[in-house]
Image (tube, rainbow, N blue to C red; front, side, top):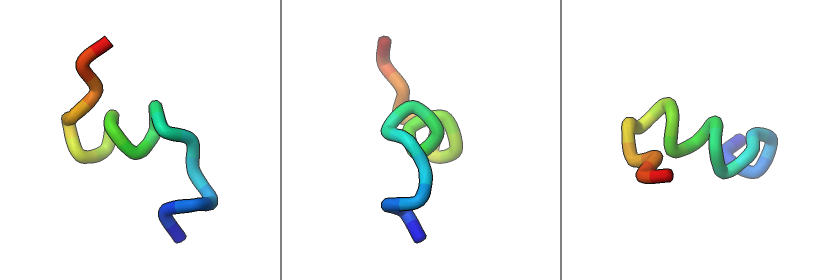
Amino acid sequence: AADQITAREYCNIHGLWKA
């Protein structure tokens, strides 16, 4: 399931996106 989304989406969902 997690592989069906992009790294950005994953981090965005979990609030871990530190760009």
